Length: 86
Image 1 (cartoon, rainbow, N blue to C red):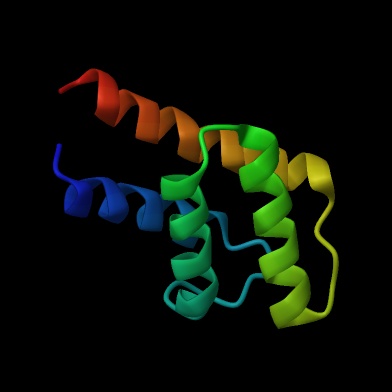
Image 2 (image 1 turned 90 degrees about the vertical axis):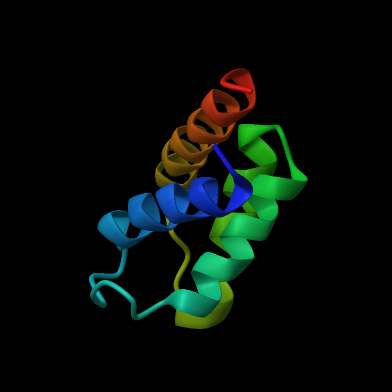
């Protein structure tokens, strides 16, 4: 799968997750930051910390770390599936 296709899969997962129920397509800047973290890191805890930071900055609310870690691990699994399919 190409990087573009991987990004679309990750975006789809994030839009469906929508932790603040703002609606699909309503937190594109946050998704862009999270995608960058997924591409930069191979550790779920680092991605989770970035997710938590991104949403805290944008919404001034702290998401529970376990929620962030859960979605981070989901995103990382998709990324690793992509790498393994090459």
